[in-house]
Image (cartoon, rainbow, N blue to C red):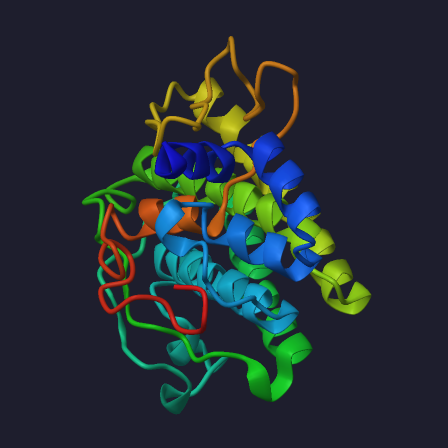
Length: 264
């Protein structure tokens, strides 16, 4: 009975807040439990710093930047000179340049590329020496994304919506206002990306399947990724990792060796 009660407390946000308030747990403790997904086995997880949270975001920005660079220019962050080969712990493999000839969304893809590369630069500058290196990335993890423009939109939509949810879940946990400003401004940009590529998927009849039970694929009935109360959907770090690791516990999917940093 005690175990069942504890599981109920941990898995329910309302009960968890009541429990932590009564127990006198600090806000950082709440942040740790929320970021790790609130599972029973992670009750004693160490607290995370703001830098840990931004580095988690940086790992995701590395992935998005590599996707758009490879799809539009056929290169990578190292190839472009944004980071050196010594600033990564593994190569980026897979993917290829997509032919956008005659495609009406070519300018949108170029905008995504510019923004995501700038996000990598922005977060690395904000973190300074604390910035984690780029991990090994496998762009072919799902087996699609580069065959044609529709394939590109299929994967791009998933990346953008997951990115929005990751920032949305992490932003309330950041204590430092400078870091919070950085995360908030990137979140707003990711939301603009999400809206534009979702509408493109609808216009061109692209089926971009759900990545988990929370996902809302774009349709004419659901043009935006919101819940039943028209609010954007946040994800915990654990939920995001489950997606990008392809269900792996500590690595896999787009990150064959796992992410770099504390939250991984």
